[in-house]
View 1: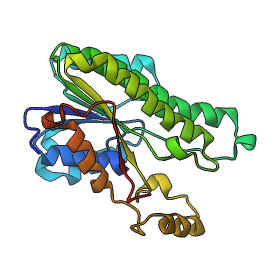
View 2: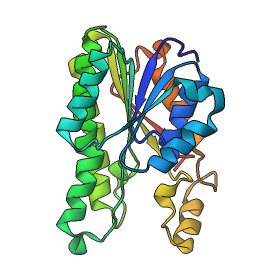
View 3: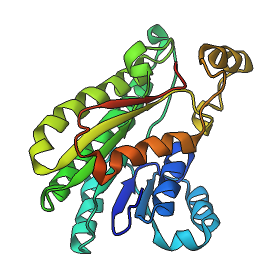
Length: 245
């Protein structure tokens, strides 16, 4: 896949799956703007570790839950005449509790980051892309949105919302050359699941037919496939990358 002369914005693009997606786009010739919320050290280390590829990586620190910050980010791109063809909504957090004991603040934090952040970024992105009558929006969701996992009512709700919102948006912008799809990773070996107890890790691996967790680069491949120009008739879809879960 060749993304030369294209620019991709990847939220949460300096760590975990987002980092793998950013790197895959860079290797395929794209310029990448990787956003992150607070960890300057990890972001700079990622850019430095890319070597020559780092010349095509830009870093943008802001919170995707802030409407003002999101608007400022996209206004800055417009002012600099930077044209973005691809948005990957990858920013996400988990705050697990059984629902009866879930603090409201944790419910809101997960919904704000995972769902409202996707809404705010996609809203500005499609307005930006409409001028070129071309674009690719890809939301990183989860099987939790389909199956619902214990202790993850907030996370599951946010991920189901991403899928439903993506389908609605895909119908609104299809005639303008913009596609909207989701990639649904299963269990992937990133820091997002580092807090799982050992017994949960063993159980989750047993539930996957391949008997292993996925690798971030395996998710990145699926993202690039949906972002390709050739994927012009894939719209409103959710691609599961779960090892057969």
